[in-house]
Length: 197
Length: 289
Image 1 (spheres, rainbow over the protein chains, first blue to last red):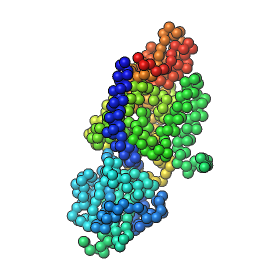
Image 2 (cartoon, rainbow over the protein chains, first blue to last red; image 1 turned 90 degrees about the vertical axis):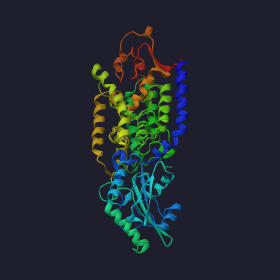
Image 3 (cartoon, each protein chain N blue to C red; image 1 turned 180 degrees about the vertical axis):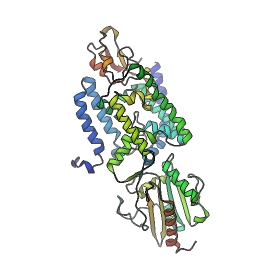
Image 4 (cartoon, chains in turn red, green; image 1 turned 30 degrees about the vertical axis):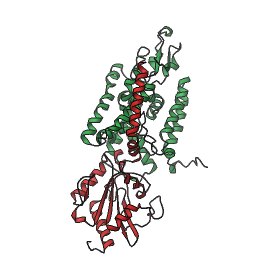
C-alpha cells in the first residue's frame, strides 16, 4: 500500500510537471548551447551583405524572412541578437557591445544607444521567445546555437543581410566589436547613402 | 534506400553506430548469464533510443540517466541540465517536472536505469575496472550526494550552468561528437581544456575502478539512489537457499556487501549476482507490497 501511495504521488507530480514544464524543457532541449560545452561555431568573415544564402550554408536561395522582420527592416537597419539563458558567450558579447557604447540595458530589455538611432535591436531569448524560432533561417547548418547575431536592411524591395553565427576574428562565437560597428555603419551607408535618417 | 555506405568519416551517425558495434562485440563475450544477455539488448537499445533526435526531433522528455542534451542527436533533456536551468534562470516550475520524472521512474525501477539503460553505465561495463578497499568505497559514496547538493547553489549564485561547463559526460557525449562530425567548425572557450582534462580523468577512473563514476561521482545516480529502498523492482534474498559462498559479493560491480545488503541504495539491479548464484538464493522481480 505504501508503495502504491508513492507511485500515485509521483504520478501526480509528474503530471503537474508535464503540464507546466514540458514546453519549456522542450525549448531548452531544442536550443543548442554550444557555449555550455566549451565550444563556439566559426563564421564567415564579412565581405559584403548577402541577399541569398552564401555557399557555406546548407540552404540555397533567398531566406524566407518573416514578414514582421521585413516590415521592420523597411524602417530601420535591424539587428537580431539571439541569446540563451545561462549562455556565457552571449553574456560576453552583450557586455562587450555595452562597453563599446553600442547597446544599453540588459539582454532582456536592451536597445541601441543614441549613436545608433538608425538601427533597431531585437534581443531575443532564443529558447523562451516565439521569435526565437527563426534562428534556424540564419545559421549555416540550421542550428539553434547561441549567440547568433543577424544584421538586416531592406532597400528597393530587397533584403540584405549578414549573420555572425560564430567567430569572425578568432575570439569564437562572437563578432569583433569594431567589425560589428563597421558592419552597422556600412548597413547605414547602403540603406540611406550615409545620411543619418 | 542505402542505410550504410561504409563511409564513416563523412557519416554523422558514425559516432553512435561505431560505439554500438564495438560495445556489442565486447559485451557479447563478457555478458554471461540469462539476465546479462537481456541487459546487453536493453543497453544497446537505450543507446540507440537516446540518440534518435534525427527521427523524432528534440523532445521535452527527461532522461532518467546521464546523457548530455547538447549531444548532436539527443532525444531528451539531461536531468542535471534541467536542474541547473531551474536555478540559473529561476524557472522553478521545471523542477516539478524533474522531480516527477525521476521520482516516477525510480519508484518503479529504483536505480535500474543505471544498469539497464544508461549509456555511461554501459561504457563502464565494457571497461571492467578493479575494486577498491571497502572502507574507502563507503566514504567515497557520499561524494555524489555532495556534488548533487552543490549544483543548485553554484548555479543560483553564478547564474550559469556551473556543472555543465566542467561535466565530463558533456565532454564525452557532446563536445567530442560535435568535433568528430565537424572538426574545423568550432573554436573553444576557456572551459574547453578543463573539460577535456576532466573527461580524461573520467576515463582513468572507469578503467581503474568498476563503475567508478556511478558509485562515487554521478549526481543522477544520487537522485535515484534513495528510491531503491521503496521501489517496486527489488533484488530479493532468500536466506534459506543461501550457502554463503559469497560469489555474489565478489561479482557485484558496485561492491555491495552481498547478499545481506540487497536493499542497498547502491544497487543498480544489474543482476550479475542473480546470474552467478548457484542456488537461486537471489532474484530480481516486482514486488507490489
